[in-house]
Structures are given as structure tokens and as C-alpha cells.
Amino acid sequence: MKILLAEDEIDLQRALTAVLTHSGYQVDRASDGEEALALTKENVYDLGVFDIMMPKMDGITLVKNMRAAGDRTPVLFLTAKAEVDDRVIGLDAGADDYLTKPFAMGELLARIRSMERRFTKYNNKIVTLGTVSLDTESLELVSENSIRLATREAEIMQMFMLNPDKEFSTKEILDRFFTDEADADENAVWLYISYLRKKLVSIAADLTIEGEKGGSFKLIETEGAGEESAYA
Image (cartoon, rainbow, N blue to C red):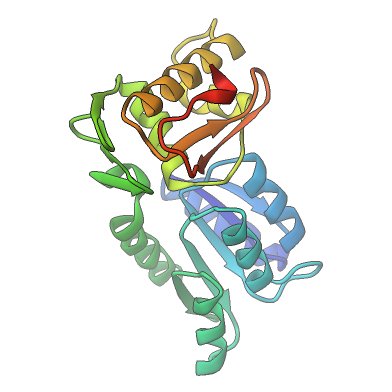
């Protein structure tokens, strides 16, 4: 599980990183909201753990920007504010849970495990977006028609469907899904993107993948289902 930790108190950031890493999580760190937002645009995370009060961009603004960009990564807020209104503002901004400082590390880990059970992306059996559903067990992609995907196709499609309108670079897709192929390059990513585009058309989906070879890609909803036009 890959976590983005955004915390401006350096000692606490180091302590949290040590605990999370020791618990088996992969952790990227940011010291302010702007740095964290930049990291969300470059990487895919399974969970964000964000302090609300940070320099340059606070946690609430950070989450609002993520949600506006189509990023649905679950977020746990860390806050020194215990008032109900502050909790409501944080949850309304798009956060999924909060933990009030000071807290015990054991409670933080328990909250994270709870969020894993509730939100773990790759344990969702059925993922839906627009008219399209993806069964991650049978690897079946369904809209007006249905088609079976290869395992890697399904994994890439699930990432797109869980993050609509979010851009993923060729390198990011390569690093996430082709780690077992030392000689894989941008051509391999483009091949799978092309496969998925054709399969979306074949089931008359109202989704398409935008982007050009070697660049970034994002999944968008379209008005005309099954129209391949720009990618024919």
C-alpha cells in the first residue's frame, strides 16, 4: 500500500514515516500542501494522510484540488482542531476520515487498516463509471456489450476508472504495471492503451482514453458512446 504523508512538523513527519514504513507501507513525504498536490499529479496513491494546517496550501484546499482533478484517493486528515465545525468542513471538502492530535500511533494504524478495508482500490470487485462496469474477478468489461480483458488490461482499466479525468504519464504506467518486464518501454504502454481504446469502442462505452504515444493519458466520459474517431 502506497501512502502520501503531508505533514509540515518535521519531527512528527519523520516519526510517522518510520512507523508506517516499519508497518509495511510505502511512504512518500511532503512538507506542505503544494508539494503534496504535485506528488498526487505524478503518482498513484492508495491513501493520503494529510495535516490540515500546512504552509503554502492547507489540507482542505489540497483535497479540494485533488477531487476537482478527478483524484478519488481516500484521505485521512490529521488535525489539532477538535471542534465539530472543523471536522464537518474537512469531510465536506472530500476527506474520508480524520484523527485529532495528539494521537497514539496505534490508533493511526488502526484507522489506516480500517480505511484499507473500506477503500482498498484493488479489492473492489465491481468498478463502475458512466455506463461501464468492470468485474475485477472475471475481468469482464461491460456496457451495451461485454468483453473479457487480459489481467494487465483489467488492472490498467481499473486504475483509470477509479481516477477519472486524472492524467497518468507513460512512465507512471510503465513503473506501476510493467515491473516484471525489464525491457518494456513506452511502446508496451501504448499497445495496452490501444487495446483498451478498441475494447471500449467494441462495448459501446461512454468512456474513452485521451492521450498520445509517449505522453500522458486520462479516462474521460464522452457524449457519443462507442465513437473512436480521434483514435482510429
